[in-house]
Amino acid sequence: MLEKFFENAMWKTRLFVLLPVIFGLIGAVILFVVGSVDIFEVLIYTLDVYLNGLHPENFHEEIVSKIIGAVDLYLIAVVMLIFAFGIYELFISKIDAAEETSAGNNILTIHSLDQLKDKIAKVIVMVLIVSFFQKV
Image 1 (tube, rainbow, N blue to C red):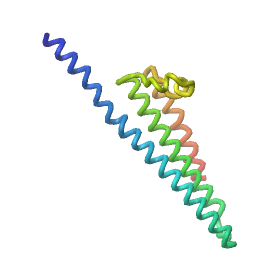
Image 2 (image 1 turned 180 degrees about the vertical axis):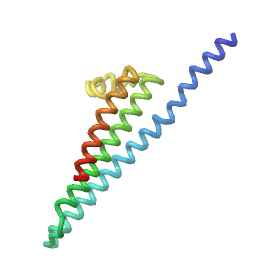
Image 3 (image 1 turned 90 degrees about the vertical axis):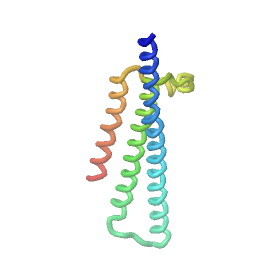
Image 4 (image 1 turned 90 degrees about the horizontal axis):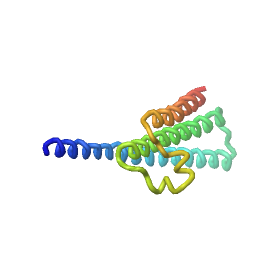
């Protein structure tokens, strides 16, 4: 009886994984919003430059750098999403809504920690490439 109580309690501790899932999703949404705001600011700046007939020095480099920075934020947001979905599926439950779509089966289905690490690593490599490209 003590063993059954302990095992049930131990099994329920997996619900603590909901904290990184929730905050990972919040972080992803924040990064998507910030990246979108950055691109919107570039749009406003570009329109202002062209409508006023200005052409500041390094204009193209500046806007390309800002847009690449926003793409970098988007990719990091994708990492957060993949992490949140993967941790949820591994520790809590399968996501029924994702299993009903082909995109969910291809992108978000995680069956092991190794598979989660592989998916995150691929996106992180893209983040590093984009960051390098932004610096160049």
